[in-house]
Image (cartoon, rainbow, N blue to C red; front, side):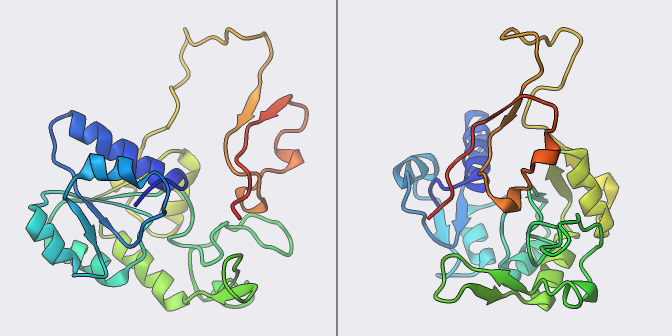
Length: 236
């Protein structure tokens, strides 16, 4: 709960728009971010639930949930409960965390993009379970291959998966997701015949993410194009 990054912004905006349309919204979360939490309390009111205090089904029943919307959630027990509940379930997928133990889907050695589904290859030779940890006492942490595969398998049972690009749709298909359940919702207006830039006659590429290696912002990605990089500073 609270502001932090893109995932939190997606949840907050989605809940805000649903509430504007007359729906009652509730939040099931693991912890607070300590940032702008008052706005979240104003939005969700007394319908904020903590997964460490009770199981998903207890919270969902108390709230009277009809639909469950999931974003950036790896708690296996509650994911299994969501699948077994019988309620319509939707998952927003905006990054690779659900099916990549290293999260960023390229080799740290060759810098080549990975196009494999999660499999034993991730353990060896990829060594993906060993992941950098900038916040812990050690410079790395161990990610469970079995848990990540279980998260992927449970998520495949959701009724709908929302992505923002064709590339992300392909990533889900590589991991065995039903293409008929995947919907693409770009976060920007679709290009049309009447959509013309008004600021200049050049094509400008704007980067609006963190400028870190995991975001794959590389010179070869924008060679030959003038680029304005409006990125966020690295989290400390």
